[in-house]
Image (cartoon, rainbow over all chains, first blue to last red; front, side):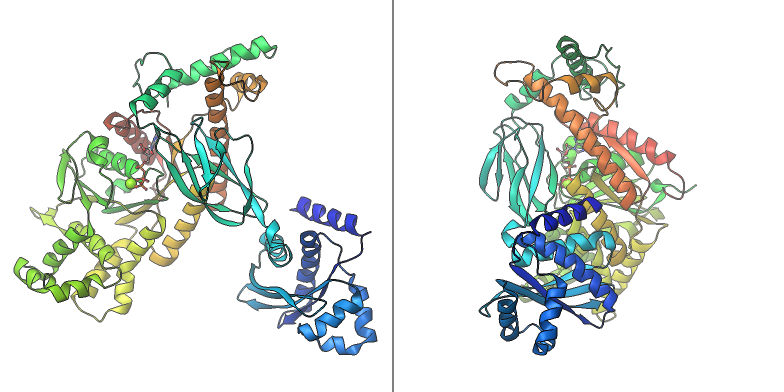
Length: 278
Length: 319
Ligand SMILES: Nc1ncnc2c1ncn2[C@@H]1O[C@H](COP(=O)(O)OP(=O)(O)OP(=O)(O)O)[C@@H](O)[C@H]1O
Ligand SMILES: [Mg+2]
């Protein structure tokens, strides 16, 4: 998490030379201590800057404008006052909102208005009060408000069956083994389907989270005799005592081969481990 | 000493496809081996028990699968009729009431009635007596997947809260008492040590506690990959190999692929075992992935032995 904050701050600092295109007017407190709101506002500023990929107008610049034109201090997020504010600040858009408490959660309402007074978006987000989740939730809210198209994550597949077709929401994304996780998927649920003739179809709903890779182990069984034979073949020797289904010999064999190759390639000299059956 | 095998009612729950049916069969087999008379009750399942037990097919009538072990695959239609007959104590009255066209469409329209009939049937069997003692010592419910299981188990409470006092609430109260009695009932969560099943299991445990109040027993972590290539020389050797070798050119390519998959799956298993211990601190039973081309009676038996041995070695409070 500290890393994420560092990255966010770094991004912010880097963009600081550019002219701000966005301002966070303020976050009104609805019955919350100003300390808490200030903290939330701080996180929100960092995340908005990251999401919109622009530095934000510094706080003191906004305070100065309000000092010069007191009418802004009564502004509670109406387009009629946010639009001239955006013009005065020289930014394209202004974000304003409020935050209240609901049990041990925070409810944040945010609105995004452009120079001409058009509302570009609004959202209500319920945030978990716990510190470890808060930053992530504020981040998601910031992206949802100003850059929803960047709100994506990925799916990383682990599939034993080679050459199976992989589709997300009905769109073919390649065949196993995929060279990389399937990325650029919008946050939320997606249908994942993995199929290869001779094997049972895999079909599940996968939840994609922001900037995360959901790890999916694809479970497919051989259903035709041909596919079963293929498994039997690639895992070779004759079944011996103990039961045929505990294929310890495959694993012993595989590690022996791996070790053999490893030695050939010029690596470690090692003896095969003996593996007990399960 | 009271163990899991001394319960009257065990509910097997978990995400779809994690092995609930397989584990339920293994557990039923272990309990029967220990001398219990066991009824394994499934809900609208694909018929798999005949293969798992190497016995007769299991449909909506209770069949004896082997010594001390019975099974049934409950379907709402039949369960509703049976339960109706039980409640009304007469086929004739049941027909008059339930098979009347109007009454039938009315009954069908009651939300949750199908689930209730399934649960009602299970509950009824738990009260059945024969020769002066319970007909079954243990009933194992191979329940529906995650969310549906909660709905099913919440029905008694919903009835108690919503329906005026009468025969229906009397049964519901009794079923609810059974479900929440730690002496008699345990819910066993089956999971895989993988991201999505783990997420669902953590959520399921929370909902089961909150919404049903059912006691939760040891966590059954199924299909764990063997610890190959995760340490020692085999790992070092595998690490030295190229990530992939040209599929078509090299006969070793599939072997390398499988070895890597095995390594990754085990590593992944270990990460999610850790997460489970952190976020769902329950005693755990670990069941291996059995490489059975056709998962049949021999595999069920092997799993059953492993399950029994581990359950027996859990601390008493946990089991
Ligand atoms: N320990 C194991 N080793 C190998 N394969 C297993 C193991 N446990 C279950 N399986 C396999 O996983 C698949 C799913 O198992 P099962 O039908 O028991 O799951 P389920 O949770 O009852 O599924 P459903 O949600 O469809 O009812 C089956 O093909 C079964 O053979
Ligand atoms: Mg099942």
